[in-house]
Amino acid sequence: MDTHPDFINALFSPAQRQERTQGPRLLADLQQHRHLQALVTRPMCYAQTELLSVSEPDGPVIDELRPDAAQAALQAGSELLLWGLARGIPTGIAVRMVRHEVWQGYGAFRLLLPVQIYQLQRRQSLRAEAPSDMRVTLQRRGARALDGVVRDVSAGGLSCRVAVPRDYPLSVGEVLEAVHFDFAGERQVVRAQIRHLQGPLRHSGAIQQDLGLAFAAAPAQLQERIIHYAMRCNRQELRRAYL
Image (cartoon, rainbow, N blue to C red; front, side, top):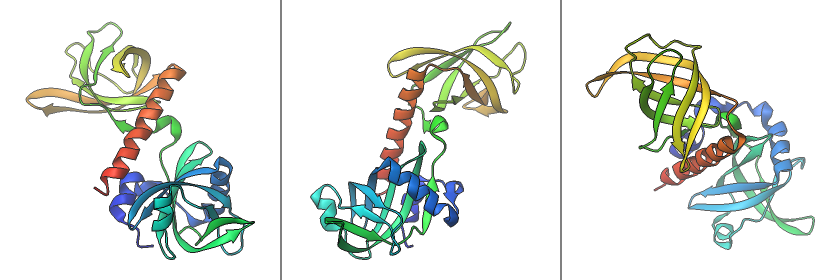
């Protein structure tokens, strides 16, 4: 399918592409979720729809698009990207519209079977770039606290850049008693473990290290806020891909 590669890459990493054999299962999962977001790629138009049937021999069927402007933009042969949640994981399918028809007494669109299927990172680790002013303080056992900046954040953890410690070095597996950071206008404090470590490297004249942290039992409310933030950032990336 001749779908814009820049747009696809803005939403789904090539590493997240699924085999075509996964199509029927993922379509069935999307049908259970029912409500889908849609993008008509030429001309670009956002819409909402519903996956009505995945078992038709002539191809899947979706409901008419809302709003009416998107409905008018969709013509035979138009390319679409549909996305929703399949078992909690953001999933997208690149498809082409075959025809507008009446399905079980209602207006609907017949689609070609998906040429490509994408899945984002799992919901609990969906990442997004952190706000530019998001700071972090790492509280260590028997060592000085380390201050730094958050680079990206997910419901499962965050990555950050901190000054290299002067007492004893950081190590993968080290448990941090408290990680302090501001998010959604509130001060957050969680326990975490270092999972990834890079450096030391010189950044802007200072010796710093990049590390990835996994939260230990982060509050559910915080996780939900981060998930909503990450998904909002991904939607913004979608729009920027076509501006």
